[in-house]
Amino acid sequence: MAETERAEAQAQAQTVAGAAKSSGDVLAEDHGEVQFHPIGVYLRVWALLFVLSALSYLVDIFEVQVVLKRFLIAAFAFLKAGLIVAIFMHMKFERLSLIYAILLPPLLMLALVGFLTAEGEYVAWLRQVVFGR
Amino acid sequence: MAQRVAMESAQQGSRIRSPWLRQLLADWSSDERAFRVSWSKAMMWIFLLSDTFIFGVFLTMYMAARVSTTAPWPDAGEVFALYVGSTKVPLLLIAIMTVILISSSGTMALAVNYAYRRDRAKTTLFLLLTAALGATFVGMQGFEWTKLILEGARPWTNPWGAPQFGAFFVLTGFHGLHVSVGVIILLVVAVQALRGTLERTQNYQRVEVAGLYWHFVDLVWVFIFAFFYLW
Image (cartoon, rainbow over all chains, first blue to last red; front, side):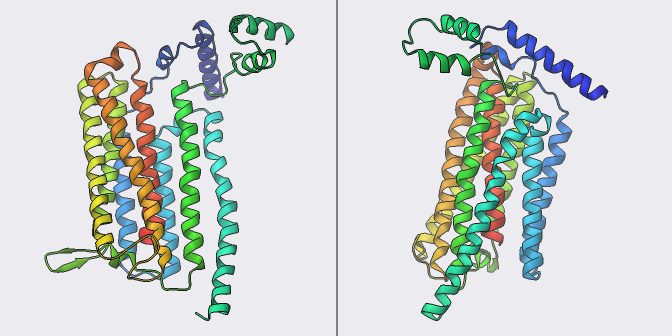
């Protein structure tokens, strides 16, 4: 509850500040958005990215069964992507309107991946049948 | 509503003759902001969204080509192996490139952090360090391309297996182009930080916006590393 109130107050303050500024005053806009985070957060995420990369490299070297290997590699990749977007790109500290606008549209790619997997497997089957290899 | 449009039109001045265009401009600039961030940041995010689709389509294209081929897929571990002394280490070059790019993402995060603390010297230092790591990455990619091309790899054929492996050139080429552009952006911003331009114009956010682009380049590499090199 206190959290929402604070966010609302902040939004209001920003609106007031925005109204007070003449439109087109782009340079002034970087006041009021300054975000200080302790450097330790970045260093921890940085270290975590190294660990996750090393893990996915190790999965490749130790010949894990292929399904498990691919699952682990994809999982590590999405974990790394999440860390980069959330912390390094500050998405975690943005407002929900921006988060939704940026993170939801790429989900459309899943449809394309679905279509093209079906299509690709069909083409592979055709090649087997027609060319016999 | 009509009153507002009239008011806005008056503000727009009489330079725009077409009433439709005036109305359009009035509607789209009527002090309604969906994103409460600066324009440069919002626009960078929207650019990155479109870039996400470009790389997403490239990766999906590569996936479709790989699924559809009946020839054996080349073993990336073998293709990108390097000799250390006389032992062959699989995928060594790619591992080093990954380490370099992740390091550059870390230095970039520090540059953004110091920019918000208005620390001119450290911001410049970390921006230059990031640019140097990025340039090293591009250099290693040049080495990788040269090695592969000398071994007979082309976008349409290669000595190791399925010709669809040529998607390598599209994926890494486009990514390398992004890294190169990023290095140029970083150098420009570093010079601006060093000369105090950012301080004078109160525009330290430019470092953050450049950082968004740089982290995105790292993000794309995460997926190329996972889905092309390791898959």
